[in-house]
Image: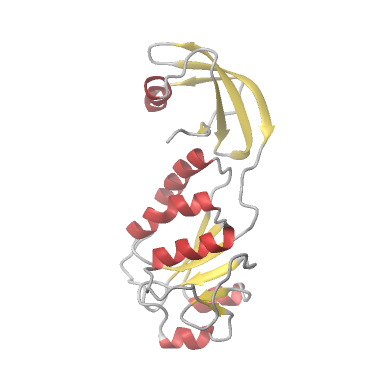
Length: 225
């Protein structure tokens, strides 16, 4: 899939010199040549989009000159904060690019009663996965990641949170809320269910039991798209 823009730490300067793997991608794969225009963003200032023109294609270096810079944010029209009880990081990584493309703003990972304690989350790796998705989808902001020790700590900080669980209330399209809690494999414990009974609960209109990552994808899509 073609990149809509490219991250480069020197983006915004008057000239860029592209080498290495990115050179191979732009010249050997995408076949860019002199006169082509390419878009770049800096990791430290993702809101600004910088357009460069290819000046010279050398054997190992691509020389580009800045044409213009503009403030151009690309993000979802709605804001959604997902609280996700911790599951296997491999399962998270499989859906993370899609969550980025759909427009999730923040993911808080919570250690729930049924979360396996040996799962380790690598936020640096999550960030690299998110970057690849951003460059393909055009999104200009990173997903924010953090963790909470338990559900209570999260709900105390975000009391308006809606909860995905088995209940009679079906989530309809166009639902308006900004924070949602989704459990891990096996759902919530009896104690957690009792604590969450005071929150607004909802389910999806399906008789099937969803894996945690499937539930996240379905709920997020229903709310944001």
